[in-house]
Image (cartoon, rainbow, N blue to C red; front, side, top):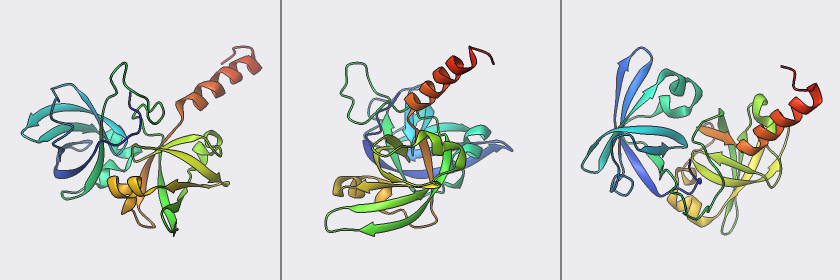
Length: 203
């Protein structure tokens, strides 16, 4: 479990295909590997990955075909910057919201509207996720916990403060760039529970 508060901007140093349906990704992140061990979880652009090896300030993780298909990790190349967050520890502050690191879909940055000290950024919203996104609700974009500022039928917008612009990849994303989206898991549980109540528990 994560909170969507990015700890560090890392750098992809290697992507090695390990078969037709998987890859090995190596990421440099001195902070997140400072206490990392084999089997630990680190979110890379919002995707929960398992550490398989640590070498100095670089960790390596296996990325399965399912993850490559359902997220934007398949487009990563050496030199790309990525948002990194270690798994939350029990008793730590919940600065963002509950984030699983399970990507629900891939969105696309549509446009940016700069203001004096912040920016409004609009993203395409895949049809299957639209029902989970509400104004003032939470959403995770590339691992960053954000509040939805406005929402349309197939888009939503967020406001990015200077800290987010400077310390995450969202500051350099451009129109057309893909982003990983994770909707608020609480919304999915509520939908399931209400659906069961309306159908009398029938499947």
